[in-house]
Structure formats: structure tokens, C-alpha cells
Image 1 (cartoon, rainbow, N blue to C red):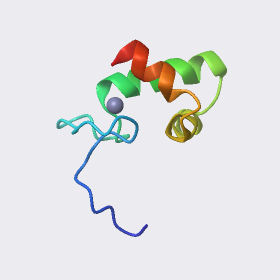
Image 2: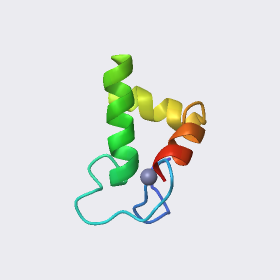
Image 3: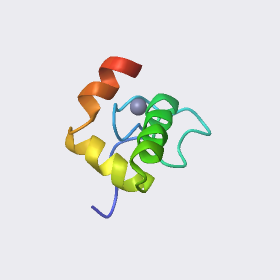
Length: 66
Ligand SMILES: [Zn+2]
């Protein structure tokens, strides 16, 4: 895991990232959703993203936001 062979893309939906969206490697849609979940669950954003990557919450995210 030393290098990422893929170009910059959203960690959750794998959409190509535009300039300025890559600070957390989340697209604007997923970033907004992850922040929303983090606020609602009072958890750190990176923890929320981890759960989303595991698929626990991303099904709902993809259907609602994408
Ligand atoms: Zn995304």
C-alpha cells in the first residue's frame, strides 16, 4: 500500500476527482454525505468513510445522493 496505482478518484464512488476535491479523496457528493453522517453520529469523518468503504452505509448513500 506504499503507492496508489490509480489516478485520484473518490474513495467511495470512484468518480474522478476535480481539482480541489482531493483533500480527503472524496468527491463533493460523498464528502458532503460523509460529513453529514459524521455529524449525525458524532464520529470522526475518517471513521465514517471507513464504514462507507466497507459498504455498511454506502448503499443508502449511492441511492440517495448519486
Ligand atoms: Zn464519490
